[in-house]
Length: 178
Image (tube, rainbow, N blue to C red; front, side, top):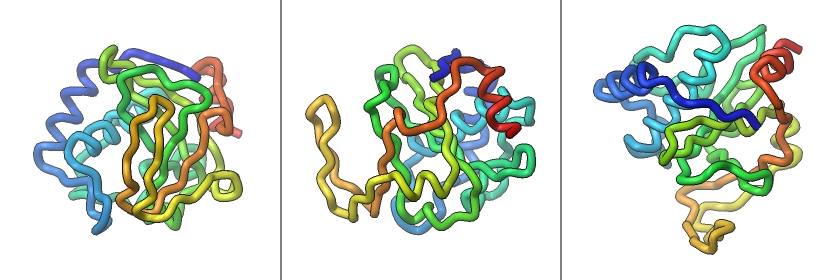
């Protein structure tokens, strides 16, 4: 996993965009403004690391494709936490998003206390589908710290240890080039 500080300019850029754009327009489990904010920061940081321009206001939902890089489409999934991610932590994908036409998922975690983003890893969509565990809407999930939440829609989970890992930004970029 790779952890980097989040540039203040990216934070300000995302705050400005979120003032005028609702990115959650699936119709169910759309994510509140805080969840949308975490998501667009994760997407913007990854795009910046890949030398791409930051996310812009497009009027809302992007159809699940956050960007195209080297002829592959990507959906960035970012969770906000108050800790650094661990190999046994899970990443979530709402089932409503599972049919979007993307080639790969990149999973990230933002440590809200240190204002750092960790790229937990990435995975091809087919491998995700083959390995993730599905939980129906209304399932009570228990986190490693013992707290619980009820799924607000069908939910897929996959552990960080099941993702393609990178030890450096250079290695991450090279993996996405292949």
